[in-house]
Each structure stands twice: as C-alpha cells, then as structure tokens.
Image (cartoon, rainbow, N blue to C red; front, side):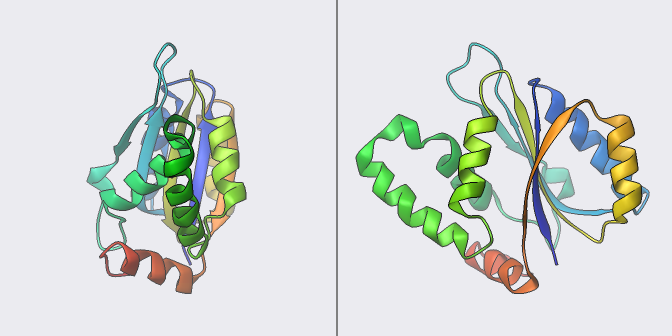
Length: 165
C-alpha cells in the first residue's frame, strides 16, 4: 500500500530541505519514495512554483500529468472562476477514486499559501518509527496532511495516468 503524504512548511525552501532528508532515508532503506513533487510559493509571487523530483521516478512513479492535474486542482480554482470550477469539480470527483478527496484538497489549499512550501510524497515500505525519529530530528517545524491509498486505489491511480503499478 502506498501513502500520499503532504508535508507543509512555513518557508519557501522547507520542502526542498525535506526532499533531501527523504532521499537520504531512502538510501538508508528506511522508506521507499516512489515519487515526489515540491511546491514552493515565494513571498510576493501570485502562484507557487512546482516541480517533480524526476530523479526519484521509477516503476512506481506517477507521471507529470498526475502532478499537474493535482496542483491545478489545488491551486488554480480561485483564478479561473465558475466555468472551470465545474470542470475542477469533476476532476475532484475523479481524484476521490484514488483517495484524494475534497477535504484533502481543501486542507492543502488552505495551508500552502504565499511564503510556504510543501513536499508531496508517494511512499511505501516505511520503517515508521525510525522515519518519524529521523524526520523529527532533521526537519524544521512542519504540518502533516496525509491520504492513505489502498493497493486497489494505487493501481487505479497508476492506470489512470498511463503507468504500471
């Protein structure tokens, strides 16, 4: 079973630092990072910058279309108005099939704002207590938003975006 996790930081570079920590934890075989994406929203900018951690992609990785659609759903709704709102409502329903519900989207949208950053992780196989200890020691203060995906949801998600689970 994979877990889609979002770590939110109240600094634009917090997610980049967190990604380095998770890459190191993966090297130590304490967690398998199947894919990751970083959202950074510097102060004074109208919208966040996003990037997929392409060096982590592999058989279990999501493609850029997934991240693009998810970030569009989370961050662009207020910019487009009602016409696109209906389309985004349909996409929101589609993501719910994969364990990403309206509450998840709302929480991320409310918390990842100007001056903040977020690390989106798709992980599995965590040695939970060791990962928690390392994260607490090595990362600045952050807030955790998580959505667990069942194996079936993960397979649907991969199939929906042209990837094999």
